[in-house]
Amino acid sequence: MSRVNEVTEATGVTEVTGTTGATGATGAVGAQVRDRGRAYWVLADCWNVVRRGLTHYQRQPINIVWQLGFPILSVLLYGYVFGSAMTVPGGGDYRDFLMPGMFVMTMAFGFINTATLVVYDSTKGVIDRFRSMPMSPSALVAGRGVTDLIVACAELTILMLTALAMGWRPDGGFAFLGAFGLLLWLRFALIWLGVWLGLLVPNPEAAGGLFAVAFPLTMISSIFVAPQLMPDWLGHVAAWNPISSTAAATRELFGTPVGGGDTWIERHALLMAGVWPLVLTLVFVPLAVRRFQKLSK
Image 1 (spheres, rainbow, N blue to C red):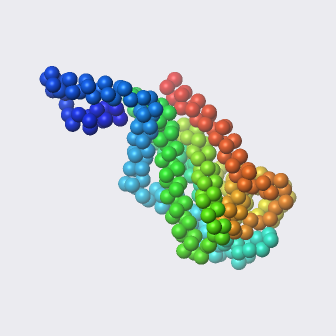
Image 2: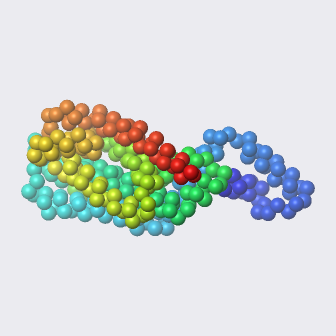
Image 3: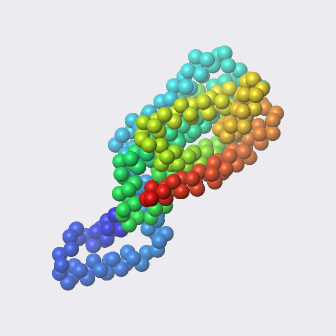
């Protein structure tokens, strides 16, 4: 469809009249379009998919509000209702400890939205329609990933502004850009988990049930409580949770309380915040691609 649209826009003709002049002009533009390389069409098709996804958010902004509602509610609940009873190993304000964890949780929960959108397109025949068009197959998956990253940037911006309004102040200087990058790196890795699950589950209702899996994974981490305050066995599980590494690394870069920790995984949080998403990407990208290829069989 993108190729047809571009020919139409270039010629200014919406219908081939059959005259020699119109046919010649259309043929000349068609030859020009064919001369463009494969990389151009991959990018063009990817942009069409991104534009479609962003248009949905523009027409239904309540989707972003809904995705941000739970983290903001959790900040109010844990920060103000339970905050006075919570402690941070090594000292520090609990709300300063909590906010980076909320950013990580927002990125972690994003894969549920990815899965829901993918399964909706799959069950409604949208993906089949795209596959029947002269589009690059990789553009469908890449477009979904780029759209989700753009939405993640918007979510992080809104959530950080909310945190600043609540009195949270990062002390890490320009290191906050590194923290922002680590948060998006985690979100990028989980996009492929969402794509794979979206192609795997049978309907959007089942995709919504993934919250029951994501919630315990975020709770058994260092988002809300430092692993040192948990029972020993549970603390080790929480420390090795990939989400905990990103939470600890962003706290360090933001200059907020880290929460202590003397295990290897906690002492190397910055390293593992880069390694864990890489491992997730290497695992779930092939799974997502393989599942996508099976749709045509």
